[in-house]
Length: 344
Image (cartoon, rainbow, N blue to C red):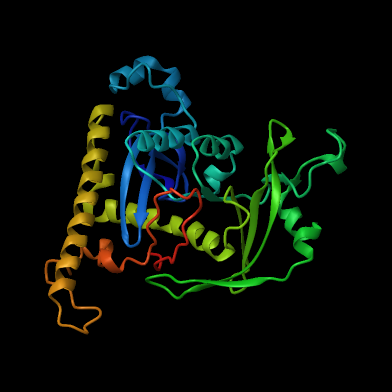
C-alpha cells in the first residue's frame, strides 16, 4: 500500500514544513508531508518505510536545509518518485508483494505506473476521471481530435467496450461499517506512454455506488484473465493504510514529533514503525496461542485481557493456519486467488 500523510505544524523550522495540502486538515495548511509504504496480509498490517517529502522551496534553499540537517544529496522529488524508491528498497531487502495499491494522487502519474511495471509488480490503483487512455489504438499518430487519447470519464460513457456490457454487482465487506455495494464495468485499454498507445493493454474499471452516486476509476496491469471481483476487492484494500495512519497517530505518536532535525524526524518515524510491527506480531502470537488453547468447537474464542486492549485490537490477526489469504510464492508466474478479509 502506497500513500502519504501529513502533520500540521507551526513555524518554519521543522524539516520540510511549508504551506501545502494537508490531508489531515483537508485544506492548504502549514504542515509536513511524509510518504509511506505499508503492508497487509490477511488482518496483519504494518508500515514498512517512510520518507520526508522535501518541497522545492527547501531543496533550492540549501542553507536552510543544512540548518535542519537535511543532506545535500537529498533533492526535491515528486511523491511518486519517493514511493518508487521505497518499493525498490523493499524488493532489494527480499520482500515480495502480490499487489501494489494506491489512490489517484499516485495513479494520475503514468510515469509511476510504468515504473512499477519495470519493477515487475502487479498493481491496481485509482485514477482521476480525466486520466487519459485509448479504448482502441488510433489508426494514425495525429493531433486531430478523433485520434487523440480519451479521458476515462468519456471512455466509460461512450466506448462500445462499456456500452455493450451490463453492470455487475460486487459487494465489498468492511469491518466497522456496512458492506458497500458497487456496480462495476471493465474493459482492456491502451495507456498513454510518451504520447503513444502502449503495446500491451491494461484494465480500466469503473465502479459506481448507487447509494451515494459516487464513481471511481481504476487502472491495473493485471493479466486480462484476472477475476474482476478480485481486482476490485484488492483495490479497496488501500483503506488499510488509512487505518494504520490513524493508529500510528492516535496510539503510537507518529504526529508527536517536535524538532528541527531531519535525522530526528527520520528516527521518530522509524521508531513508530517498529512499534507498529511489534504490536502486529505480538497480536498475531497472542491470537494463535488463544486459538490453540480454546475448547474444541469454539470457533472465535474470546481474547485474553492483554490481547483485548485498545492498542492491540486494531491489529488483531487470525490464526495463521486458517488465514483466508492464499499463500503465493510467484513460482507459477500467475496471480493469487485472494479470498479477502473485511477491510478495516
